[in-house]
Length: 168
Image 1 (cartoon, rainbow, N blue to C red):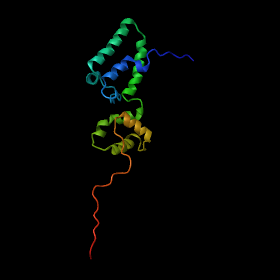
Image 2: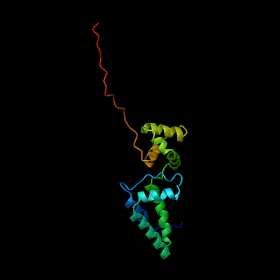
Image 3: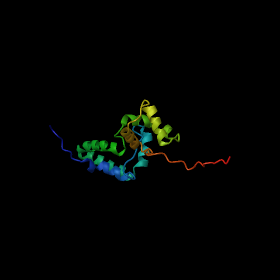
Image 4: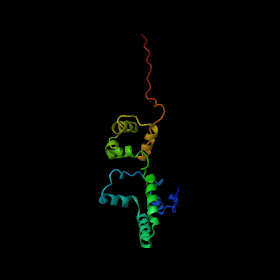
C-alpha cells in the first residue's frame, strides 16, 4: 500500500488558519450558499462582508507566490482546505436533507414557528412524513444553527384553579 505523506497537516493549513482568524466567535459559520452556487455578482459582496481584507490578501498572496515559484504543493493545500472548510461551514453532515431544507429556509423560519413546529414541518415536508431519528435531527439542527428542542415535562400553568365550596 502506497501512502502519500501529507506535507501540510490540516491543523497547519495556512488557508484555513487565515479563514479561522477572520471568522467571529467559535470559528464556525453556517453557510447557506452551498445549495445552488450563486453568481459571482452575489457571492463577491458576501465574501467582502464575511471576511476581512487581510484574510483575502493573505490567501491571495499564498496563491500568487505558488504560481510564481511553481509550487505544486498549493494543490494539496487547497484540497485540504476545501475538506476542512466543510467542517467550518457546517456542510459535512446530513447533506441531502440539509440542501432540501435550506432551499425553503426563509419561508420555514420566517413564519414565526417554534422549534418543535419547525421540526414537525421539516419531517412532514422533507422526510416524507417520517420521524427523524434523534441523531439525524441533532446533525441537521447543528448544521442550520438551530436551538435545541425543549426537554423534560412541560411547565405547569401559572394559573391555579381555585376550589370552590358551595354552602348549600
